[in-house]
Image (spheres, rainbow, N blue to C red):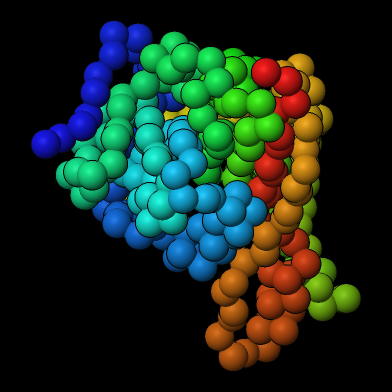
Length: 262
């Protein structure tokens, strides 16, 4: 029997991925992208170390890629997402997991201190406002509960404000950063080749914004990791340069914070 549940509180239309759910589901699918499988999921599981029987909430779970891995570890997991179609896809793939349509900025469907851990994998940068999301995730955590965020690295992957460059004289590939401290709301064209008019939003925030949100909600960071690409360039004149930049400039940031107070 399907466990999909729907609630009257509507997610913000301009940040929901429902309108691109079909394209995104084809892209990510059952097990996730190449980066999910080789970098993000292994790293997230190692940091969180989910235990059998723990109650875990996977926020912005999409089609349930990470939710399923938590279930495999024996956790009592619930996945939520603002996209009804992505939740439908998640439930079809995993009828034994509880999935719900819900807005990450308003988790009133869950009582205070409901979960041992809350995760948000590669989604926090696409949800706004940050303070409400962190507040709600902290509220549903038990004392000493863990909150794990994985996101595009805000220091090096800033939409429209960063990019790769090549210093030919030094034979170095570098990362160009045009803006960092300013918070930004940037439209993303989801599949420009098919329909350039369909887009959703991403939000850049400096690290200080995340740490401020943690502090305001009684969370203290206990793990902080930066993950580089696993990919390697094909043989050629630029292979050494490209591989070096991949090893030195991280793509992803992972932060685990602990809730200090009940």
